[in-house]
Image 1: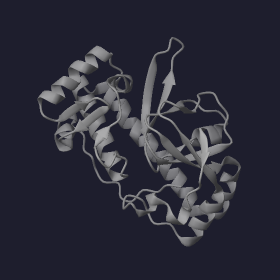
Image 2: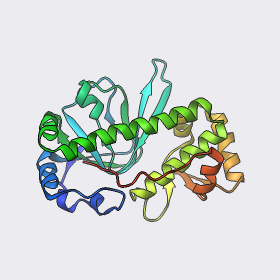
Image 3: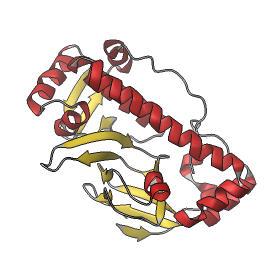
Image 4: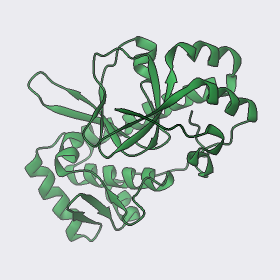
Amino acid sequence: MTRIARTDCKACPLRKLSVFRKFSSNEIEFVSTFKTGELSCDRGSTVLQEGAHSAHLYTVLKGWGFRHKLLEDGRRQILNYVLPGDLVGLQGSLTHEMHHSVEALTPMVFCVFERDRIDELFRNHPGLAYDLTWIAAREEGILDEHLLSVGRRSALERAAYLLAFLQIRARSVNAFNPSSDVIPVTQHHIADTLGLSTVHTNKTLRKLVKRGLILWRDRGCEVLDVEGLSAVAGWDVGHGGDRPFV
């Protein structure tokens, strides 16, 4: 990871997006001092390692990544994907050890915050403290839906749910490349998320292609009909209102 020039929190591009709640001037001032810098990493880089200790929290400013766990024999389970506005490393900050790893799917940029100032945030900024609680609760809700998918949805329903979920999340935070709405995952990533073999995943994705719901590109998947995918998955997208970020 490489340290880069710092973006002024008052001019943060994420604050222009309607999906995020508006901050008070006092909150922005605190976040500006809470933030210590920015880091960038290349595609394929490990941002945080399972079992590692970190003195920092990170908010994704740009790019795509994913959280995952590994078994001793190398089998991988992808737990969730991280996109702009997502907080990374909170678990390690509170338990002093990461219980999963985070890897970059694309080049990424992170805002860096000092873990030691979390107590100050909770004491002096209850609105931001509530935001951290909201973020943790939202992550739990997402993992609940992922567990339901892996445990009870069919392979076709799992794949449809995952791609609809990623498309909607990415669109809301302007995560796509301006020239292409391609989700930057391989079929191996999808297999490791859904708990399926690569062969089974390939057959399942072909069914979605035949239905005209997706197209498979060299560097990922293009969703053609997100409502159709949601219908196949039996997933009610819902609307959560404005969401916070740090």
